[in-house]
Length: 249
Image 1 (cartoon, rainbow, N blue to C red):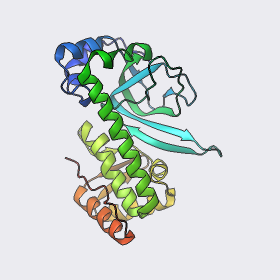
Image 2: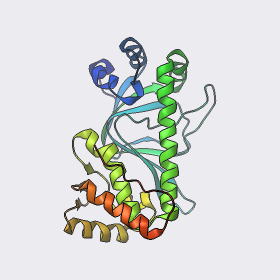
Image 3: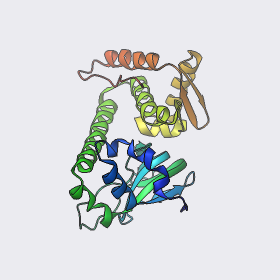
Image 4: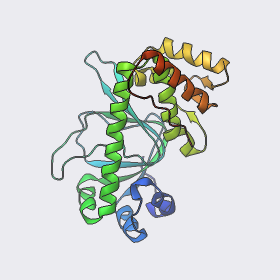
């Protein structure tokens, strides 16, 4: 869904995003001027797995889930993207790439969208912008590695508490609250467990006042308690690697 609004109207906000850290205002304006603004309704698909990768999407508001389908047709959530995240993947300049996943807005969202051929030329022109892109990709890889380690070694309680902390940092606090707009089924997909197990844990934590949950959202009230759960569950597992205990700030 296109919008008539110009990216210039959001320029002061865009300039504060991490992707534009240390990029001069003049360079930032040049980069933003090559994009267009686009809005996505809740549950609107941004691209499908297998589609040609023709656009780069930078999220300005809302939330997007990136998924893949298993051989049996079951959906697996790979990542949730929030404000300032690049939703689409990257291709080598000039390469004919396809998306390896599907991206869908899980709440009304707004994004800056570049044509891939246009975006490919920007990093070479703006070194600070290129460094920020590399840093964003490194962070995405580190998160995937951390989540893989958690699924392989951590107990379910530790995985869920760590994921809620991570999502609150990225999705909740950025929008002024700590509500995570995901169903229990989607949370279960993220941490590799069953919806029943997630429901059981959330019900217990809600009784303790740590979280409150409804049909398609979880709100975190006590980050310190979640971090303590993650730490205690990790110690029970005997895992040599530390858990995700970075508190939302």
